[in-house]
Image 1 (spheres, rainbow, N blue to C red):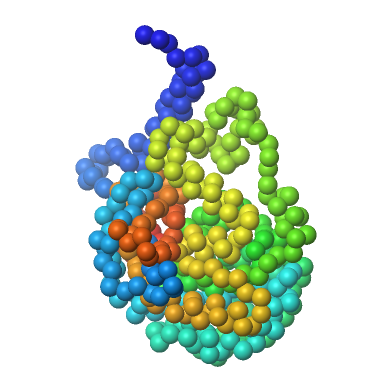
Image 2: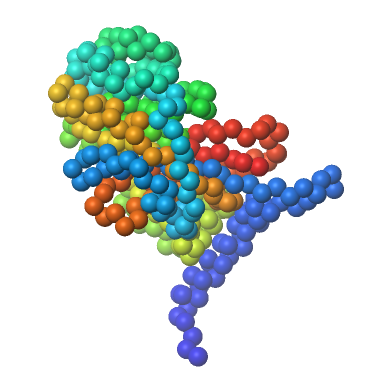
Length: 390
């Protein structure tokens, strides 16, 4: 039999070594050993919520679809879907997140008369609205209130900020505010900002986790960053350095920057080159990070199943808000139970069956935290986009 080339053998050996390095931690999470005190076997699953907006090519909302009309894969593996009922009647917690720094100062007058539009956006369900302004840092201007007038007055009286626009910091701040709302509430962020971040301390990893691990739909209205701002910020985020000469398991400092020095994470990244489900998750993570570098408001909308519109004046702003107000209560909310999902980002692919003439907007990923080291004695509650069930 013809022997494979030496470099192929070396690659296979490296990947096998990576798997051996990672295997103990993987197995310890999915199959814990029984203890003398208890012989109970615990099986964990994750409830994943997947919002979806279905429209005709002309933009009309499509109703009356069932779970059987959809097909979803999680890291390439098909899942059984359930359609959640009456989600449009659930209370709504909304954070209006407004850029007041950098280029955002030019658009503050456009927000002076949003009262009627905000009423349509919220609808007739019980609601709580908060207003957050941001420049180099986010500031809570109006805590959660059921009073729409108080919220719109806060938006219409925002002051100009400094010369920065920390979008990622502010999105993470707003997500944290929404986590404190009752789990029965639908959660949404209305983001009004430019496209490129300027000044955030939040890393792309942390931002991706904050965006992907909650059931928060982000609806974005973006205005363009200036060309100078784009060049400056991309110069800090982009890298054209080649990969390490020793391969993905190299001990060189730049071998795997996402591993942050962890050989287990580095092994997972190496293994993802061989295992299709992990490879899909890794591709989704890389794609999301690259998209965040180019256009943050558009990317966060797509990652969460929300919508993105551009605006340049009060008329186009109102048009985008009107479309969002019509779409928020009319999304399908699908769900599935992922059995023993791996920690980290998962790639979702939701499709319509036999309906090529319809368009579909939905979230493209979700995040799973590592399993806790000790069992949680509290009963399960649905918190965020995923819920751990014991």
